[in-house]
Length: 269
Image 1 (tube, rainbow, N blue to C red):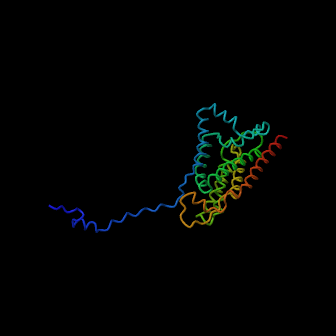
Image 2: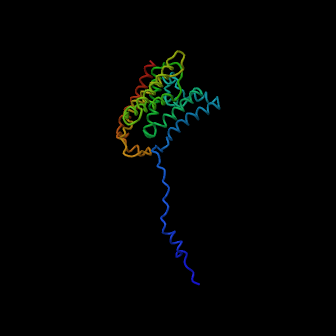
Image 3: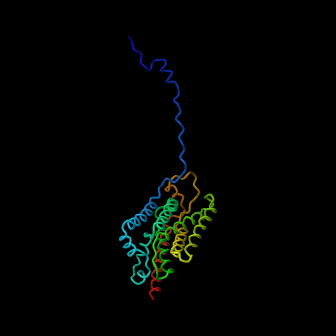
């Protein structure tokens, strides 16, 4: 008996003639920045881990304070200028470190993808150092200062500057800027109250440093023609690349060093 091939069967031929079922519609991805702010996470983690190490070992906590806190007398008379940097990573209490790491996590998570890691780190560190310099210059020789608040205020100011420069591109910019101004005002007011242990000069210095840096080296973005899905795509819209401002950064760093040396000489006289 001759066996007919399965493909020759009339039922199979009818099945073959049927059009294939259409593929289910794919969900369109929502436009969003997919790049994680890894530098923000790292800075928040470093501050938290240093505090945790001292919290678990009180002797280490005291040693870190003695060697790293911004003690003006040691900066002025012993030349321990490095304290302006190390004090940015030390904190005096659990609420202090919780507030600063939370602020770094929230504000940095918004600023870093837009500014890019290099510019974000420059504003964080140079703004924080400007805050330390202001604290040294205007806070007097007594007391000690620790905390990342100067750097936090720097990136906070950078976000405000960016929103103002792109106020026609974002939604509800005026309300956001007013909200930021109220938060800054409340923090500064609390710092000037009698008996407050908040280093307001460090906050003001960090805020001014961050604002100046963001105004000059911050991104100036053109309107995108398609949804932006990553920080790399966002960087292509930048009309103000960092390389154009390298001489200004050198001048800023030189001026900051000169200011610190001038303050030390004046306080030591």
